[in-house]
Structure formats: C-alpha cells, structure tokens
Image 1 (tube, each protein chain N blue to C red):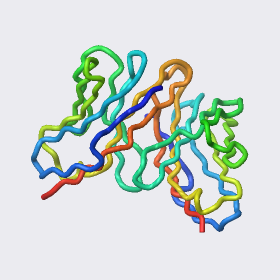
Image 2 (cartoon, rainbow over the protein chains, first blue to last red; image 1 turned 90 degrees about the horizontal axis):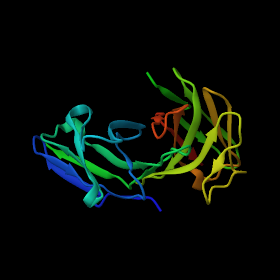
Image 3 (cartoon, rainbow over the protein chains, first blue to last red; image 1 turned 120 degrees about the horizontal axis):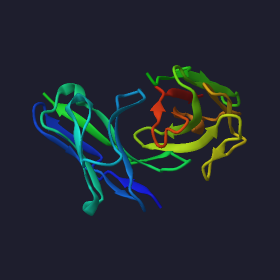
Image 4 (cartoon, chains in turn green, brown; image 1 turned 180 degrees about the vertical axis):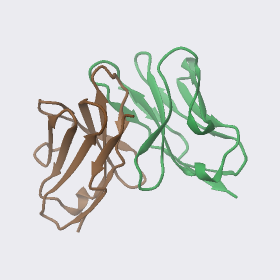
Length: 114
Length: 116
C-alpha cells in the first residue's frame, strides 16, 4: 500500500538558517510527489511537485526538493528560512490513473526562531 | 486560476443537527472533487471521492449515511454532516480536479466545524 512518512513531527530553526524537511514514500510505481504548506486554520498551498524529469524541482517561496528514487525520498529544502515560513508542511504522494487522490504524510511543524 | 472556495469557513452547531459544507471550483470545471478531514495536529485523511453526476466513493471506515456527498454540477460539491456529534468536530477540506488532470488537485481553504 502507498504511504508517506515524515519522520520529524516538529523542527525549530533560526531565521536565516538552512532547512531540510524529510519525506519518504512507499509506492509501487513512479510516484507523483508533492509538498504543501498549511498555515494555522488555513487550507493547503502547493509548494512544488515532481512528476518526471529533472529530479531537483524548484518551487515557490524559494523552496526546492530533490527526488531520490534509490532512497524513496523527496526532501524539501530552503537555503535561508524566513520567519514567515513557520507553518505545517505536508508531503504527499499521488495515485495516478482515474483515482488521482493524494496520500499525505503526518506533517512537520516548522517553528522559526528570531 | 484554479481557485476553489469553501463555504462556510467556520460553523458551530448543536449536537444532532445537520451541517452542509459547499465546495466550489470558481474558474474551472471540476469533474472530480475530494473531501478530506483533518483532526487537530494530524494529517489530512481522504473521506470520499465524488465524480460529477455519480455517487461518491467512500474510503473504508467513513459512514456514507452520515457524510452525504453530492456533486450535482461541474462546479459544486456539497458535504452534509448529518446528525452531527462532538466527535465530528474537525477541519474539512475539499479539493477539485479537472478532467484529465491526473493527480493535480486544487484545494479549498477548509471549513472548521465545531459541534457543541
């Protein structure tokens, strides 16, 4: 069965420091991978996605993620975190075909220290 | 483009009443809409998938008689929580997909339901 694991429940980084949020997936075929961000009480905003091609994908707000098939990982990175990046981050894997629904990880809460 | 709205954004109701949540795709035709539920500090769990003009497909463990989903048009899906109880209090999020969109979904802002 498909699954997504985000090993870190809560991460705190200092403003200006680099960030890496981990995501591992289990999927029987080539996955469609997503990172979403959710601010408190809000819906989801798509940061970036991987469908195929270049394994390093660029997203909005200065985020990037790298797909590593050998490690079944899709880690999210940002070289310099801003206080406004504090939020909950969800990794998701999508089923292809007619279903098309997403399976989400449990999320990683990011706190940013001034 | 590809904006999805939800109404209401917040609703508080008494136990035993029914609550309807609307999900609208504002600038595209959504052949498929998904309903997710998110408990505090938890992830999103898919409740059901609805295709325009047909019955919704519910995930295992989701009571279809309690969570009524209607997708009557290409821009509107509704979720009705019937006879709501405090344990139904949650954040409900919908997403929409256009025809041929594959896994590409656009999410609504969510609805916070509190049942007293």
